[in-house]
Length: 333
Image (cartoon, rainbow, N blue to C red):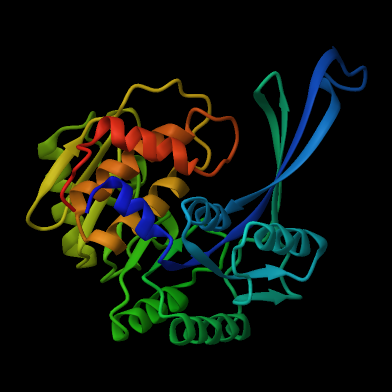
């Protein structure tokens, strides 16, 4: 299978994304004066835009690459939740497994931007864990999804907003294991070591060092190998896939391991890059089980979205062209 065939195969995949979804609101404007009420700039708003954020951005990346994506999450019974659901449906993302709750609000992050620079962010959210009734509803939704859809892979996208509780993580991983469905996770510090037995564990280097309480400086193959060994001891997972910012990415699958350098980019904004990386990695792994190709393509995709301002999904055609340029056109997968 070559790169064109691989991209064609994405369209045959159905992927589940479970985690914290959110609405990203962007307010664009310009600054001409300082407020007389306080020493803060006055932003004259010229535009407002809504985007899909959080775990929803992973689903958006999957859809952009042609895959079918289903969201499994809990949102508020509010206008932001309705707005988010409508945006999902416009993008062809399945929303039937979302569980609305009257006890939560839908996370909304409002960014105020002038001259392509973020000046302020306002967060409307609750971050406490789901209650037992919400957990039951979400888990029932997961069982229905797994049995009705039989997805190619399930992605956990954790933003520490309370949807991925210890119970939800543990039981969904077990449900997937019972059905031989591979799993991937983009973890956060709070539940960093709860994803025991996951197939692909994809933190960034900062998260790994915080989770393992490491103070090592820099990046080296030796350090990364030690990190994988420590993670493996705690998690018993199949693959470590660690993004290293400007240093690229690293993977270890128990046999093969490699530090993949980054490609030169004009970085504008790193928002949402991790969402793109886990989406591309999951798709490539689901089709090929080739960890080296998975890491190479996800590394390229993460760099591409960093050239855009704000949270954006990967452009499938641009990723295809970059993969054809930077990887062997007849790469054996």
